[in-house]
Length: 165
Image (tube, rainbow, N blue to C red; front, top):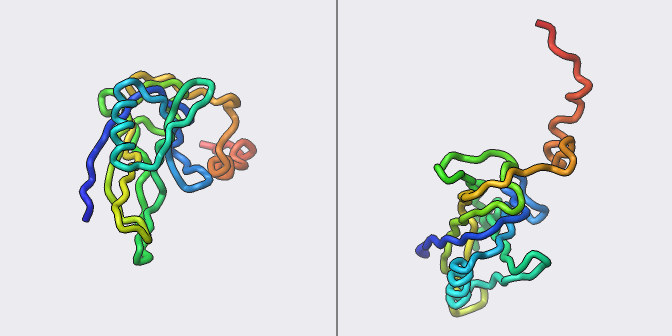
């Protein structure tokens, strides 16, 4: 079995998605790397990760992800837990508490793997956990807006009769 190393990257976070997987079945975030994290990223690139640094109006960033499930060559599928998010004291932050611009430290699992049809080993990373170092609370544009799964869950509650005690 391949050995897993842990790597830490810090910077400003955007589009933090740790409660509902995206359309590709991943939890994750966009991270604008600080100077030290950029050095660590370059080291990961030398080891062979395929992830790339992207650019937008706010600067250079990387996308960090964790899939809902892991598929093995023999057909087995293993479910994976969502990304754990904690504050500086290690207290879990639940729901969509973390807003864009929050300072975070991300713990990544870094591991070697055998790509299909290749002789040499590959190297990959997977988001394991997030520590929020400076919280900017998430404020939805429309406080009544929900993601599709939550919207279906609360559908009809506004019109339900109040209980009589």
